[in-house]
Image 1: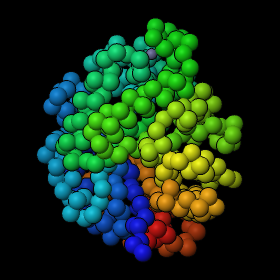
Image 2: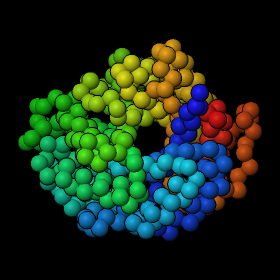
Image 3: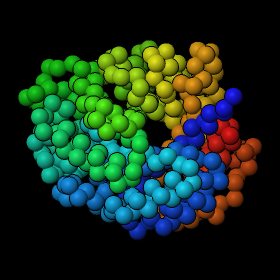
Image 4: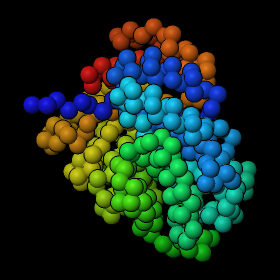
Length: 343
Ligand SMILES: [Zn+2]
């Protein structure tokens, strides 16, 4: 019998031309020895888009950089999956990103002040019903797929809260689950049906908070979760839980609905191990081990030359160590422990 390699994935935000060399060193000296075989590279608007120069933000990640990173990954058996945040996370707080600055007509909530902050406002979304928004999104996706020579694409879509706004002439009064599903299906139509790549997304907006007991970040209290029954189940779901919970019922729910689900942890080792063990248990119970093929370790620190270097030179912290570690040290330990468990 052929043994199918477990998915051992790592996520990071990456946006800088100047960091390509230290990043390559990090891939070769940290991720490769740990057996990472999937790399989710979140570049969003930091890529230098040739089709839409008006979108390229502060980062300067070029087509040549993408090719270099793609080659480094291919040479080391790593599948590189570009991530571009669709629908939500179009900026931070009231501040719009470059998409909404260039195309303010796509903003779902143009009336929200630029200096709005959590808890008044989380962040902006594009309007899923604006007739021109998908054409732009598809152009940007196409450029990333081509530049990274990718056979998979991650559309983000976590934490979308600005939806069906009362002041949006198109979405007002509409059902949030319908709008969310439409947006997912639009992306699917382009990525999977047209481009033939595999589609990945975060799972939180599809988790029913009432049913799962999740908080409003990991689950939905707002009306989007019913979209789970209106989207294709060959989208791969990355279901994130960064703190230890009593239970993670969404893993089984995704599997029962036919999705492949990859649990996502962050730096906390105990929480990560618990989520992986519990996810494996649920997949085994449902006799669907293939539907839970591995795990993704996410990182949300701002990567710099120093932090890449720190990892390259870090001695693996003891797996049994109970001492308090700083975030990056604990992230390293989590990477070590999780990839070890998925060896
Ligand atoms: Zn709208």
